[in-house]
Image 1 (spheres, rainbow, N blue to C red):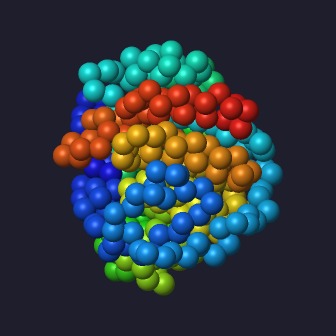
Image 2: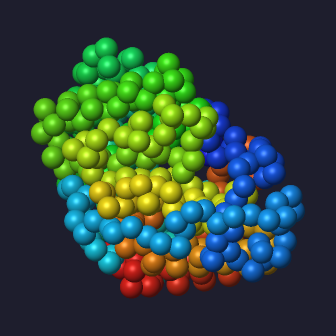
Length: 351
């Protein structure tokens, strides 16, 4: 995804190149064989141009591992409940106005408000119009990893810790996300194809925050749902900083090429649900006409219901993505909004 994200006083980009935008340019037939699971929508099952004649479900898709019943750090995991929130970037509306619109449509506030900042930005002490019970999730861009591991950025990192420490509530911090892709300057692919370099940078940040006593910060390690390139040094395991350095395991995944929720999120759930609560940090769905988008939202709700280790979902709720035709906002049609509202008002999302 390459949308522009507004930080105070400046414009930042979530991706410079790649990510969701890069995947969108790849024909579906060029991707790995997709899993056709029990949760495929009727529309997608009957109309899938370019899909293989046969496909094999992902191994283990029908079973779930035992899930943790605690964790999350300062932003605690609540068993049986999932926080529902969004990155909001709606054409012609401020964040305050966007939050008010969604409150009116959904009959509830966001539980996570997702904001993006560049590495050299001053991180926020407050977030605009944050609802009383909402948790901010700060996605903080990275930098070349040597800039951190050398110690050259220690003062900047300490400043960031002091800023977030001033928040009047716990904060989710998602630094250097999608490090297993090749589209970011902090990715392993752009740093000597060395997962250890990413781990070292993460741990240094974590230790500096601890030294500044920023004890209200929950650390969200958030890879992309699949790795690019596929290599031993670029796996989840090679890039994981360690249980003592991670509070939540996050994941980005978008329904771009008719992926089911289990295709996007089943792999990381299988790998980490028994160790850490899972947070779907970015998600969206293509609209292919009819009820395809509404049906996919219903599938996502059902998938989360069936996976107790998921403690939060953050939709990429925007129509301001530059150079990209798809509108990811939840109200592109009445059916999609109704499906999202049903998910938002379910007991599972009452966290």
